[in-house]
Image (cartoon, one colour):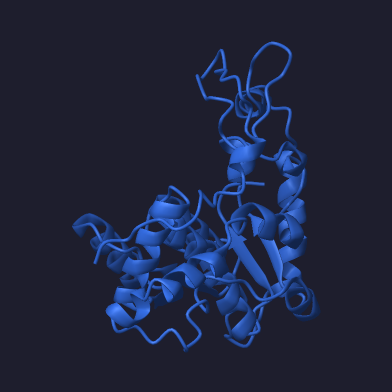
Length: 268
């Protein structure tokens, strides 16, 4: 079935991008990356932050003390999971889960939002990680639905990864919410390391209002409306009356705050 676009591009960040393209004089990152900023010397924020790290301008000893206090507040002594670690089986998430369990005495629940297509080595790494001694949940969405929505996202947003990215950023937090786990530990602050909202530089985690605005800025309801209007759900025999957004949308800010769920970056 051929998808014929019915409406203009839906990516909400396009209008705010600079009209004149510039590149960082150090790493050649363009100013077309959403939310990135350059200093008066034409250097992007990630490069400036990297210099702070190289010059030891960040007090990581003090930050580890903060980490210990945080984990002391959340650590369970009855064997229940006390932290959710979004996990691919790669080096970053595996290291975080390993350190939390074996160095800090936490009991992590590792959560993976399944990619549309696995590589052999990716699947092998994830299995090896689980078998090394970690509790794990793999969340896999209806394949036909995922394929259709990813195709629509590519056509109307320009990003075939949109649905996978949404799942990575929502599913682990939803698991924490549903399992009454108060702490979610992601890896690095991508806004800081690769370019984005520099106001997050000294924060331990992302405030929920920023999280929603940055990672869920695209109009999912419009994609669903297009799929209904053009008859794609009927054509692919997908039951759109079920809650098809359950993997792709966060609990509300109020729900997360009422449960006391905290989002933190290990990189901080």
